[in-house]
Image (cartoon, rainbow, N blue to C red; front, side, top):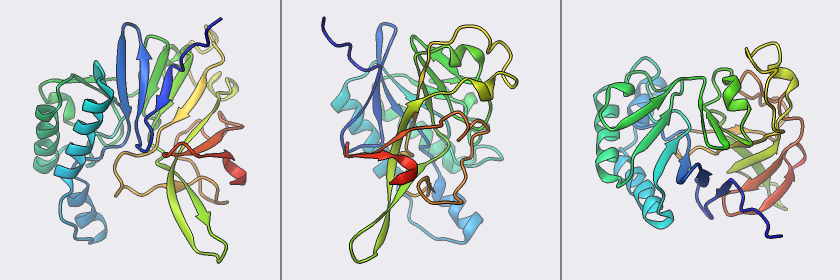
Length: 252
């Protein structure tokens, strides 16, 4: 019997994955954070030139390479929590103009106001299920229908691992986390969670934006952001974006 192709497969050397949906193939990214440079200026006093053209080209190039039917952004296409500003809207509009496929945005906590843009399909914050794959940003509890999927993709966390070399120099690398999703934390928090349960795999997607920082998931004291993590992910493997498997994320 032929082995089934994975429903969600990372793209080598990129913080992106392809996903097999019902009759479609999607390119999946999370935490694009359009307009982040304006946010960093006001939030932290950091002055950076805009990397909007480079971000747009990176995603456009991935669309060309993977040839999907659509792009699914697992939350935080924008950056401004209080509502999309002029810079964010301009960057997102230019991105939509540059892409040859439709874009679905799974609403994140940084996405207020983006639903008003043309050619952008925005889901509720509780997420959506497309075929056998569920998507939720992760700042809220997911809908029961999302949890009934075979694979659940989450953003929001910007997972990264701290790696040290033989002389003690440390660096942070964006990482994927993949492991079985535990039902127990959702039973009292999600209406309808007592229904279908397909022993889903949870895939925590690294941030697409390389200026958005991250949580070092293998460093003690670095907490998760989602209300269901880490309780719902008792065990997970960490992978670098180049495909290197690091093993259980807590012991990397």
